[in-house]
Image (cartoon, rainbow, N blue to C red; front, side):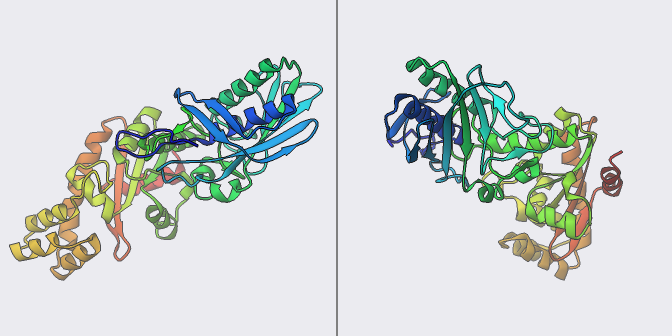
Length: 389
């Protein structure tokens, strides 16, 4: 396959699982209706980029053909990179609009379903209904249009069943957001443009929004927000609360607050490790290190505000992580006053971002010390989330 293209930053682009599925379905339909084997298929993506994809694992029968396209993510660190996405296309004598609760008709001729390694929807709030295969709207349309193009080419007026499968899907899905979104048994077939653009922040923020939307649609107006696994472990092991009422926000604190307001959530409680959340005290709402790394500056300033001399501040500024800096504060008996002044600034910034319509609080912790600080309303929010009032 020739190079697809590069982003402005020079990173190689790839193609989505949706493009793989559409290409495999198109190729399988072509071989089924023509009776000839092909080794490459052309696919025009919604982004307008033309792909020429190699086919693998071709299996041909009289009334059924299957083949696979290998997923390529370019320079994006996608867990689905390299997996094979299979499509099996077979002729069916009679079309029923809904063959089962688990299948989705795409047109008058084509019925699409997912097989091994394709996730099933188990919760409301997604594009598909409960019980249906996790094949998103744009990929479904891509598959439909690709197969219909082949039908027109060969003047085929009968009905076709298209079944997708990903043998590695169930294992790969464990490394994705799918289990948290209520998609079980495999991966989702995704993509809005057909092309993977490396390090897409939009994909991450869209997932955060979707996760919170699902909580809201399931009757939850109050929830926890944690950056990642540290926060999730703290919820479970230290606070002993229901982690199902939580949303992982990664580094996107500000965007998650905006999502909560947009969705009409009543309140959220941010719970995070000091290594990330200390940045909130400087008003930094994207905690990724490439956006800002003011950890030692914040701790140094607050140490000085609470009586630390220049030597101690300089020591803090030379630390490489918050664990090291906290040891200095502990030695100087400054942990309590520094955390109190830090929490006041964090509260100021998060409440300013949340506005009047969203109740918001925060708990700051470390692995060594447990809870280091919490907003005045943190305990009340904990209770409201658990009671879901």
